[in-house]
Structures are given as C-alpha cells and as structure tokens.
Length: 534
Picture 1 (spheres, rainbow, N blue to C red):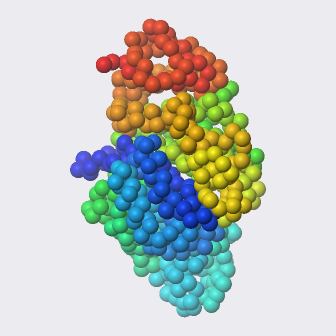
Picture 2: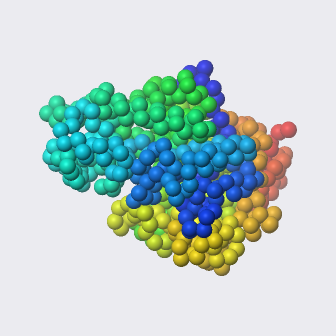
Picture 3: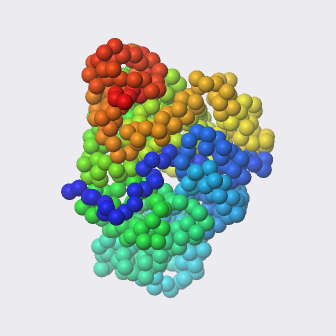
C-alpha cells in the first residue's frame, strides 16, 4: 500500500535543503588543544554560507567519556567540555540562523554511556522493580549472544548492551514479552514510558535553544524482538504527532530507511547511509584495505564502467511508489562511519560527476565535511575512541581526519603541534584545501558551489519533480521535471548517445558534454545539466 501523508502537514524545509555533516572533533580547533570545538565551527560558518549549506548536522556534541567518539552519551542536556559549553552551541545556532542555516543534532536514542546517571542509579538499585527499569536487565544470562554484560554491581544480574560494554541499551520494551521472563517489559510499562518521555524532554530542551531537528541514531532499534520494526515505528509515529502539534517546523530523520507501512510515516525523510544498498551500489566507498560491512562490488561510479544502476533504481522506485514524490530521501557523499567519496583508486576527476548526480537526481543531498574539496580517506589513521567497532573490520578513523582549511603543517585545523591532533592530518604533497581551491575558479569546490546554486535556482532539480531515466548505462542520462536533462559519466572513457529530449537544449552547467541535434557526446568523467525548454 502507498502511504500518503496528511495534506494539512506543512511541506518540510528539509526537501530543498543541502545538509552538511560536521564531525566536531575534526572540523576546526579554536583553542589549540588539537581537538575541534564549537568556537572553531563558529569561525568557519562563512564558508558554509558561501557554499550554500542550508543545515548543519552535528555528530554527537553531548557530554561523554568518548569510548565510542561521543555515541556513548553521559548527559543529553550538556555539551561536552571538549567542544565548549551550552552557551557556545547557542552562539553557533544563532550565528548559523543569521546566515540562513539550520542546526540539527545527533540523538543517540538506543543506548547511553554506562556513566550516565540513569545507569548509575540502576546499578545502585539492588532490588529494582523490573517494570520501572530504564535499561534491560536479566537476573542471569539465560539469553544467548555476546550482547549481555555482567553487572559491575552492586545490582545483580546482566544488562543488554548495543555495541560496546559501556553502551547499555535503553529499555523501550518488548513487542511480545515472554511471560516466563518478567524482566521483558511491554512497551507501556513505566520504564519504557519514562524513556519515551525522555526523548521528548531532550528534544524540547534543544528546540527551546533554537535547534531545528535531530538525526536519530539507531532509530529502529528501540523496541526489542520487533520484526519489521512495527512497534518501534509506532513509537516514532506517536512522537511525530507531538512534534506536529508543538514544533511543526522541526524535523527528525532516522539512521536508515523507514519501514514501508500503510500508516503515515513517522519521520520527515529517510537517510540512505553509506552502508545502505542504495548508496553502496552507486559509490561503494571501499578501498580501506580492511574488511568492509558488505561484500565489495563494482559500483556504478566505477572508472572502468563495470557497475550497474539496477539496485539503486529498484530501491528508488520502491521508495517513490510507497512514500510519494515529495518524501525526502537523504543521500550523502559519505559519513562518519565509512570511507569518503575520495577513497582507494577513485580518480579525483570523477568527483564533479558524482556531485552533479547527488545535487540533481531529486534526493536531499548531504555533504560530509571536506568532501567538497575532495578530501581523501586516510586508511592508515590510528584507531581512536572506538573507531574499530568489530575486530578485523574497517577503521572508521580513516574518514574522520581533520578538515583541511589551508596549506601548512596543521592544515589550518589547529595551532597545536600536529602530534597532538585528535587524528593525523593528511600530509600528502597534493593534499587539497579550502583556501587553495577557493582561489581557483575551476576547482572542485567552485564546481560544487555552482551546482548547489543551480539546484537552489531550478526547482526541477530538487525533491518532488519527476525523474525519468533516458539512458541507464554509461553515461547515465535522466530528465528532471520534464524540463531539464542531466548527463553524468562516471567512466574514464567517452561515449556518444542519442537523447531526443536533448535536441535544442541549452547548457546550464557542465564539463565535457556537447550536443548535435539529438546526439550527445560526453567525455570521460563528463557531466552536464541541460535546459530543454525556456
């Protein structure tokens, strides 16, 4: 069935936005301690405004012991001292608003740090009533798997974790509790209900300070033993009703893609992460030299033209058929959990074509900090703050290295000795940086800026208007809104293709594409946006 959102819900500003993900430890350091902070972000907001960013998505900024780089929250209502204070975040929110930029925070909904006061209280409760538990406790390890951790006391028993032992899972109940296991609480028990209320309390606290939304980490992991995430999605749908009533201009976006149900969606959009099939079939940001989270395969953006659009197009059509044309689908260049767009042997010459696709297909684009200059994945970056979440797998530190603002030993990231940096900076002689590319009109940075401006100017390139594939092989050719044709060639070799819709079209932006009647020639890594009618 197709879910149609109620017509009285306002169109979300998220549809037309360009998001920009900031990993705060690595963006800009204002105080010379080698770790990025909010004052550093404040100093670089003009760059984001110049680029055309509409919303910043911060990875977790909350107080934390940083055993998982901040995804282990010890206090949802306090900025981590390494980044500054709540007032520093207020200053960033206000200065961003003055520039037309919204701020979204990362809400870690499925677990906390074991240093959170809620968990410390649970440890002290030797004779706790299971119905009131904020976490999931079992009197003994009668459940299989490594996800159970023995209590460090004085409380007896075991607690359920999510990733690391220091990340106890919050209790949102079980969809169908086993009556022989009284510690499995229903979703309406006092403990799960207290956690639901806490989500609202955290959101309200930051909404009142001007934050415009949240990207929700592990959004569909909350209710346990929940096939199809039915009960978890119902939880978020209830929260969405609260948002619509009290904060109608705020947005929530999940980590991942919402289950397709007949009811109206809970979130304001979906997020096709780097590990999601839609994204990996396009870019497969591999090349890390260590085992990835999926079986590597040639993506469509393969310089040797070995990939296919089949997986992406199937997922895209299913998304549109169920949710409708106006449902934002966020598609990122990369993110904090996997390799950057520039990784392995991907040629830098291919990056303009990749951005041309991401900014014209009809998704809501998200740019991972530094991707706008072609910052590379540093596969030799050392494991830092839990960056290897499974032994032998990819080290996420490779994509979390400092932003490269300018030439020089510290890349403009920090005045500290580079040995004290949160992660090492790229030392390659051809390392890209913002200052150098800003001075070069032909740089990737300027290309991205022009594409962002074109997307803002031309409504047919944004979320909503139709997307019709005209040629699904190399090169990819598609029509947007019946008025524009986009040509994207990820391959290093050139092609000639017949595109009747391009007859008489006017070039708006591009490189390496020419047309003679209905015959279009595209050079290797060429791309173009054409207007087919005035």
